[in-house]
Length: 100
Image (cartoon, rainbow, N blue to C red; front, side, top):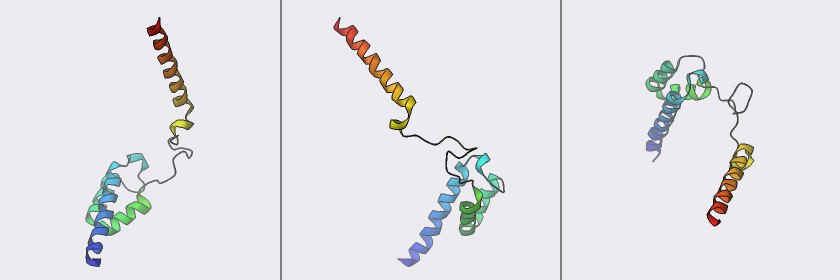
């Protein structure tokens, strides 16, 4: 069992790091260009993967200055709540029109 884990864990780490690397925006990658990071992860699976996870990508929480806005839950989003009330108003108008 331990022999299997010694093979599977680094393989899973490498696959995760490679997919994360190729799916990351170019502007979020640090130090070296994206293709070189991908090659590093493929050629040196353990070292490249760990290097990518530690130093390859900006990992600031969303919502910090200079980053995209933070995700808001639908029940906390005023625009979403407004759209719900508009939908309800439209349904009421249609229902009133059908009754007449």
